[in-house]
Length: 269
Image (cartoon, rainbow, N blue to C red; front, side, top):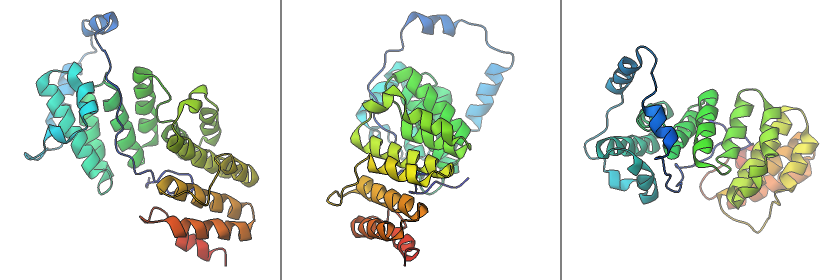
């Protein structure tokens, strides 16, 4: 599947975010370390690592955010360096080659499956590659490990990708949604409006965007995406004149070609 666009289906230009360091030294870890593993597990693991994508020699682990490196300190030095380098490569290729980025992200996850940020990077890369089921599973795992709201907007968009808009709306009602920062709340509103449109509920999509308080004085990518989503919902609801106003506003603040608002504006003429 292709990358999702700003009408509520993704288009998020996110780098792996910074999580606080975690303590993975509890008793449960020790017990799991000595538990029996299924037949062939070791061979599968070796084969996966042999097929890991190459990492250029010039990649420097110090290019990774210090807080992410802190998260990786629960690993051995050699393993943490390998994970860090795969994460850097995943971020490097996320835009231009999402499939290659996903291979690097999977390699990082395979080496650091109990580290929240490794699962989150895998989830983001899978999302950008259109692998909704994998993305949802990895982002759920990251949230279980780290706690907090996690990446609710991306998770909700994955539910849409899987054809389950009602599940996306359920995520929007989760208690954790109140813990999101303002940018993430806007992204979640955009996705939930898209879910309403998926269900043929255009007026409800308009109300969903209105609750996020689109502001003509606001600037930046989030404000632009919200204005675009508002225009899109209004157009779907048959309110063409209002839609034109918001698409025009989106065009006026779209400094980085974040949306195709200029093209959508033509639909309102």
